[in-house]
Amino acid sequence: MTGTPVPGQGAGPSRGPDALPPRSKLAVTASRVTAAISRRAGKGSGSVIGGKIALRIAPDLLAQLADHLQVVLVSGTNGKTTTTRLVAEALRAAGPVVSNALGANMPAGITSALAGAGDARFGVIEVDEKYLSGVARDADPIAIVLLNLSRDQLDRAAETRMLAEKWREGLRGTQAVLVANADDPLVVWAASSAKDVVWVAAGQMWQDDSWSCPSCGGVMNRPGDDWFCGDCDFRRPQVTWSLVGEEMVDPDGRVWPLELQLPGRANRANATTAAAVASVFGVDTAAALARMKNVTAVAGRYDVVPYGGRNLRLLLAKNPAGWLETFSLIDPAPAPVILSVNALDADGKDTSWLWDVDYTKLAGRPLFVLGQRRLDLAVRLDVAGLTFTVHDDLAGAVAAAPQGQIEVIANYTAFQQLRRTIKEAQA
Image (cartoon, rainbow, N blue to C red):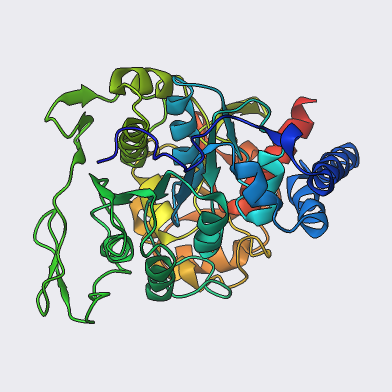
């Protein structure tokens, strides 16, 4: 395992955006002005449109901005935003960090984030799975985090095996250290083309996308926490970092309690991965964990907010794997639960994934259904034999819920809409 930054990979003297050539400086300025106009117009942060304008002016701007940084890329179907935040906090123990903290994870959003790097030493970048290989080529990262691969946005995303193959080919021979989830066979197959891999036992609750061997197509065997192919020699690698219950075990066998404010097993796994990344850069594990302990919410996720005289905990779940993890951390029955599902462009317009989610895990809880595709979700809950009511807006659902904190689970655009509704009510 690499303990310090690899020479020549963003580890040289910091030049910063001020050292860019004139055309690239113009692109950065245009990005900032466009983003500011977007914010004033109430159209969001402006990071994506600003980045698009910048890349039109200077197509190689992302590579130029990343050149003076020690870069970490974080990718996977679930957990990218949270893991990115945890890695960024851990690395702040060693110096200033720039990160696309709001989750704009395609090249335009990444470029916009790096344009604000200032005197940052580290760049911690969330990357959409489909763009990972290209961003890795441009950013020349020291470390790349591979979290998981599962079905998501079925109408426009590649099948998981195809994504794994794209990763495998795109990362073949990379000089970066890969920090990869040893419990996901698709991730292991993708990472195995690289020369330097740190394997993390991060777990895999959702296994329905990895029952066939990505190497030979044979049937995967899954005894306990282990897995292997019955038809070839593809199997779970030996791990160096692991999550055991609520504790983390490092490569030297030392056990570390994970005292996080973020809830659930998935976030303990994310923190274990982040600690492994920090060690690649020589950051002391105790210092990394101490900083991660201070993270209470990530882009609104896990926030407990007042609305309509009640407390609502906001949870994001975008696909079957994410819903399964979320069900494991909500309050037990009879805690009320609001569910909201949209099918806009950013969500994927195909809602057939609803039938892959085991909603019977919500039995015994009063359920309230919202969102653009609330009737699709209502049919799914009805088939699951659950009792629920359908509402046109958040206010109606909250008013109908019994006393106690309300768990609110929503997919991507539904989550953002609910946050705006709550913010407007608080204004």
